[in-house]
Image (cartoon, rainbow, N blue to C red):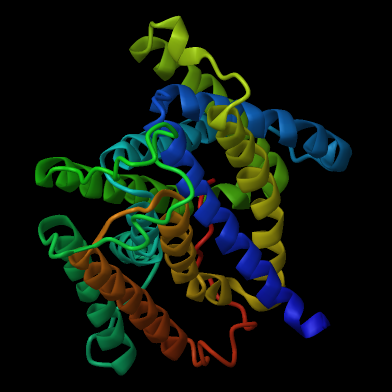
Length: 349
């Protein structure tokens, strides 16, 4: 049973992220302001993490200098506040399944940026380098396919879903975004992943000067709460937009703030420690699979053939990059996932 724990843990992680995309999309579909949502979820995460961080790290907290504080502030602004605000707007334009599918681009984008910053190497004369190039190319092709090719609509369980996106008229099918709106949503999602990729790269450097992962996460989450409140207050003046109530809005905020930020942080850290980050990265496509299935059953989400083909290309690109990375390090991405690697896939949720 002990050998199966890492597999059960990653299944739980990816199911949680699938729920994140679905519940967030549902909250937006019932009219919740995306910027207000980000503030509330960050506030919930902060309230959850602060007592834990104080209890566990109060005696061993690293020294906080002004320079480190400023770096944390801008790191939080770029990777968390900006990333979450942008992905919120993107989900308004697209679907939960699309959000889950584009999550497969994060490791590839992170690798590409690390290559530009000289943190990764690429030798196209070796098979590992060729695999990485193929992976990045497939990823780019997948993005283009999803953005510009809709294809026939696959109306999975359209007449048998449990609820509709608006929780009102069960006879009204879900609407399909216009091509222009869809393209905006796709590229906003990629922009959010780009911000997260920068966050991942800078986070690694930040941990060298402030090695407490729990405190670093908690402080950045607290900073993001303040930052996202300022952004929401500037763009949202209607008091009605700030109301929660006992509805899907409150459920989504609590789920994202406590379960996604709190539970997955611990689970991801535990899985990386036991099996390595490559093992976690290889299971990323499960988010898309789980989200697609849940979205089809729950809201009858309409999926285009282009999204399916593009998602397959994104998954293929992810695995080619991981394969090239493992080959370069002399490991087997399937058998030797427990060996150390500096390839990260943890999202700033």
